[in-house]
Image 1 (cartoon, rainbow, N blue to C red):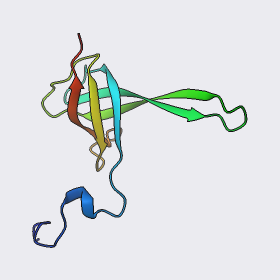
Image 2 (image 1 turned 90 degrees about the vertical axis):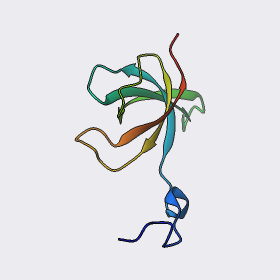
Image 3 (image 1 turned 120 degrees about the vertical axis):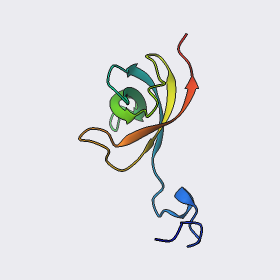
Length: 97
């Protein structure tokens, strides 16, 4: 198989639908190579037009077990890694105090 650069593709830039990227807070890191990240989404209510917060708990792959509870992280969508893990941690934005 040829490398992506040889085919004129450069990672996510050539994808028809780029991978989703979210920011959230680590709420659990007890599992091996997995962190649970709470992502807050602010949406406007369709009828009442009030802004509502929705929280999703996403299981993300953490290869080096480097995150701790309270860290702000950026996660990116990836291929399914297990039954629940479809995201991976890209970078740690802010360490817990």
